[in-house]
Amino acid sequence: MVGVRRMLAAALAVVCGTTVLTACSSDPVPTEVAVGWSGDGRTAVQVSWKDDNAPNRITIEGVLSESPSYVKYVGAGEPNSWDIPTSAFPPDGNYRVAVAIGTSQGGVTSKLARSPVFDTDGPVGPSTATVAPAGRSGALMQWTVPVVPQDFTPNDPLDVKGPRTQKYVPMVGKPGEQLRPIGPATTSTRQVINSIKPPYVFQVRTQNEWSTRLGGQVLGLTSSISAAMPGLAQFSLPIRARGRVILQQVACEPETPCTQRRATPAGVPIVVLTQVIPGGRWTPVARGKTTAGGHYDIGVPTGGSRPYMVSVPDYTKPGLITSTSNSRPTYVRNVVRVVSAGFVGGLTVKKRGSNVTAFATIKPAMSSTATLQVWNRVLRRWVNVKATPIRNGQTSLAFRAGSAGTFAYRFVLPAATMYGRSMSGTITQTLALHVR
Image 1 (cartoon, rainbow, N blue to C red):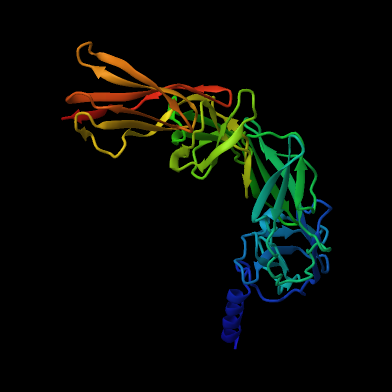
Image 2: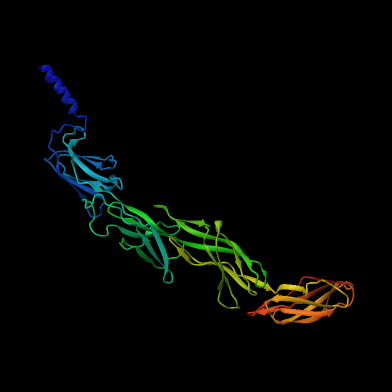
């Protein structure tokens, strides 16, 4: 009999030994385990319970979530409450606090008593943000927040009551400065910022009782543009405007000064402006967009001698606003354009004594005077044949082919004036005539 008693005692020593944490329930279970926020700042969760002046062991249990490695022992003489910092709870999970009788040396000596289940879901940050100019130098920021996902622990002890439980803190970062709040936390999803100019970055810090998240970013960019265009152009024929756009944007890392970076994206709108009359306003004449690397190549119609300037206009799209920039003006001088020239009938071989009519059609369709010239092989220079009137951009001269041989003719076309600016004259190509 004594041997049996010794064997039972040894078995109980293994099951109820002091070195295991799930010991036999030799002590009464704590009661009325409750959780709530400690203070107004919501930086800690206060757990409280009732027992008979016993030492306690506090842990956090995951409910369909992994349990964090948090253990706290409270002595028998201490109050039956403890503040657990919110950092001890993993984000976006379901948890409860468990309290038992026990010490770090003696282990757990009662069953676990558990608080109600609560979630640690953080705020739902903005998905997109838009910007629009406001006033002379301000900006209106607006952000969109997705629908809050289903709460699987509704009305848990740590839920903040009210229809709007998360707030937004508008923040702005400038080069060399840290991202900083520019206003108090608000439940509004819009913010007007006065007197702000790019480059900058705007972000929304969304916060609730558990954590904060950054989102709703808007980049305020500055731009610079280079342009190259030919100095001469034939009237009404397009020229090419080529160049590159470089944007400057701000990037901000947590707790560090913001930096400025260069960007050369595709899709930046480009506007070519011209000044039709001296001192007149600049008006759009062509539009385009940048390609990869910030480059652009735009066809520009011409309509007389005038300056041209390429501009990046103020434009916005979700998450971005760009300030305007202009290239240096380039003066493009137009040249009278020869549309056609030759001999009526298209024949370049004539019989001696026959009638020949040389003609030229030009643009603009002006009225002036041209000169028909012939190449003098003896003098080795062009000599005037006769002045010919230009009517609505057309001129011609009829003459008789007097002697046999090969002759070269051309029209000398005068300069013109359009919208108060001069246009250079030109000559036609050589018109060869064979007389036999």
